[in-house]
Length: 320
Image (cartoon, rainbow, N blue to C red; front, side, top):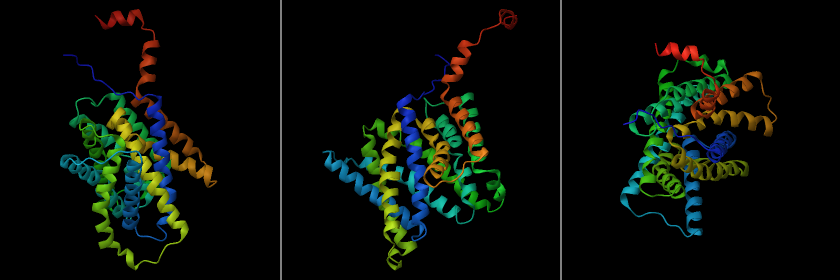
């Protein structure tokens, strides 16, 4: 039996999908920034997944597809909705009421760290390697650098809130591994995305009604509704189709890398769309993230090793 560890390497198409996913989720910060001024958090989340579910169900009907009727598959949809939406969304919403968003972003960027460990323990084909671990650590440092050392000012206080955000990152990692079963069940990525947001809607709508009492809120304006539609259709419906497609072809560890790319996308979108300035720390952070992603991908390192000549004297010495 060979001791070689197989590492899933992403091709150009998969990298393009990962970058696109980071843009879709990075753009969600703009939509949330508008919506949160007029609507409470659980109402935003419930509208987000519900409208996404309606859009995807209509798309399936328009394309002649149908949702599965197998109870096992629907049970898996609810499990995925719990791990990938209900638990992390709730923990992050609660955590951000006690800690700054910058610190929450850094803590959420531990998702790939949890991802490589969970995948190593629970899968046979995504084992932890030294290059993966170093890549994740370097990428995490890049995220921290981009957001800025000032965001770490609250580290150590409000420990429960910080643990909550870390719990969300861990839940995302388990969700990535859990979602692998849909490929084994023969469920297409578009159907998996639809099932997950549908199950999440069934769980989240009652919570929003119970906690936020949306019927008592002032009717929001067109700008807020535009943001809700944007976050539902672009940052949720379309994003989750890409999410499950990448998972199917590239695996859990590679998929979790999107957490490193989201701050890059958000900052670049801020510069391009809102005219925000880019600082040296942003460029340095992006460089670290790129180095981390290259280490996890592994191809550049393998090419370097192949091109590096071996000193005959050293080679002889090694065999002495």
